Image 1 (cartoon, helix red, strand yellow):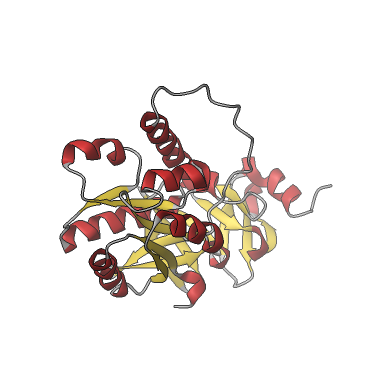
Image 2: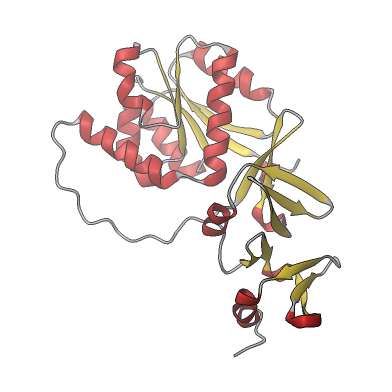
Length: 270
């Protein structure tokens, strides 16, 4: 697996043993690239800004800046996927439980780590950052007393999927979006077709369609989404049926209601 397919992870914890434990657990995962370990909140802020990790294990209690301070300084919208690591008791954890992808309560078992990591990979896959950002914002407001009136949110372009995590024989593989030829529906699952390989994920086509860059992908049928630059030609069949032929020779049916827009996207209609 090449490095650009790996999940880039940062550990931020002031306890040496905690850092080493997370490092050992992550070292067993081929799909992970550990890009750094920092020991305080200020270093965490600098590392998140300079290295842009996909996932951060963030200790809540650190010198300089706490984990909450790190979120506040980076900003909820800019925070990567986050798993809080803490020694807080269960009662105090409630605020963080709703703000992060997950949390690890020290000392934690291997099984608990695996649960949190799997949840993080799934959430990162679908980039549910907007919802996480809102929860983190609520956490920040709750940690500083009554919430102040929110400033109007600046409009930002949607963050489209760049990678999708798929499970293969008990391991997670990160599939770059640019490598996907097309996606087909299979009941409650979606099949990612990458060259001669097919990967199955449990996700709705509608969700995937909304998270894929419309400049690169087009839903040609209720059960098929195609990367446009993989299309070689548009075929007109008997009885008004249409299909696309991909550059590798595969044919995929096009619904009549989407034919005209597809022609426009392919530059066949001005």
